[in-house]
Image 1 (cartoon, rainbow, N blue to C red):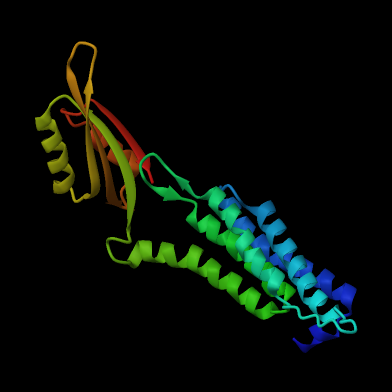
Image 2: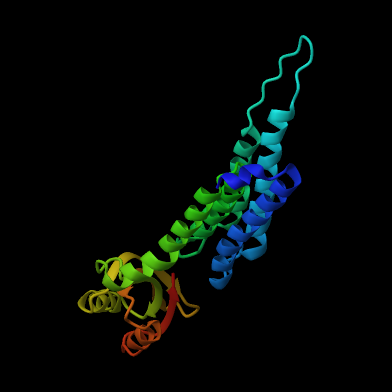
Length: 239
């Protein structure tokens, strides 16, 4: 890619900004397809401005001229280093903790950080490395997980569910637990809460976080639970 070195200043920055936007477009579309909170527009903004700031940082270092008696020393990538730190607040904004103690948004936060990395790499002139990184990340997100879900270990072929049921007595709690174990469900955690009604009748609310094989339909799982005679109400959520 020696021909990049022959680009003049204006053409070079236009090319770098455009290239950064195109690569971030790939990441943004992937997030949009999965209906994530930060997608196409945010990725383009982050990568494009990261590229711009990196370019300015490098050019400023080379264009700075010392004066008589003044020694000016500048790090060409000092501003780029601050970009990585600054993107952190965007990542923190998409990491969510749900009521069932599950955490979501980590991948999206990492992709935001990666979009900044793309901009920095393009701004510094690492075109091939930036392109290769994008495709490696896409393979890691879109190809490998579905493959492991089909041919990987049983633990990787399962998906997590949050189950909340209400039963009328303590014997039903034991029956619920034994039913899940007997049918091959892996119980991650269990929490039991007593509910006192107005007539002083005590009900038992059971929160269970469990894993089921991806081949099993969540709706079918719901029907199998609601049809148990000792279950009064059921709530199922895919994590």
